[in-house]
Length: 197
Image 1 (tube, rainbow, N blue to C red):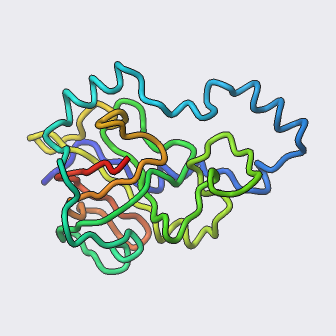
Image 2 (spheres, one colour; image 1 turned 180 degrees about the vertical axis):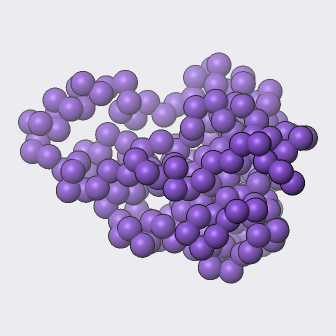
Image 3 (cartoon, helix red, strand yellow; image 1 turned 30 degrees about the horizontal axis):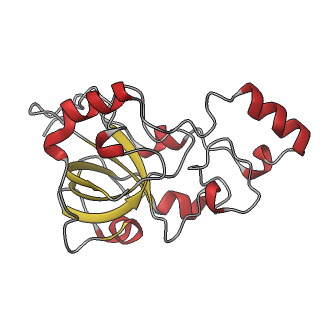
C-alpha cells in the first residue's frame, strides 16, 4: 500500500528535551511555567477535538480490549514489515504526542519508560515526556501509530479526543507494521484501538 503521508518516530521525537536542560532552579522553572501556561497539563480534549476525532475515526474504535496483546518492547524486537501485531501502550514519549491535523500518535512502553508525571517532584511542562529515561530505552520502546483512509493516506484529523484519548492514555492497538519500518523506527498502520482510560 503506497502512503501519501508518513510520520516517523524520528520526526516526532526530535524535540525530546533532556533532563539536564529542563531541570532548572525553582524560580526559573516557575517563570517558565507561567510563560508557557497554555502548554502545561492542557491535555484534556476540547469538544471540537472530540467531535472531529469521533467523526473521522469511530470505525477504528474497539469496544473491548483484544486478547493476546504484548508490550511495545517485544513488538520492537520481533515484528517485521507486514506482520499483524496486538500490543499495549501508553501515550508517552515526547513533548508532542499528537501531530496537528494528522491521525497519528506516539506510544511508549510504560513497563520500560517513566513519564515525568510519575517522577516525584518533577516539574516538567509536559508530564507525558520521558526525557529522564535512557536514550536507548526510549529509542527501543516507542513507536508511532497512524490511521489511514481507504486510499491509504493519513486521515487529516488528530485522534486526540477519540473516546477521551489524550496524552498519558493507555491503549491496546491492533495493526500492521508499515513499510519503511526498521529497528530504529517502527510505524504501525492501526486497524483498531481500545482506549483504556
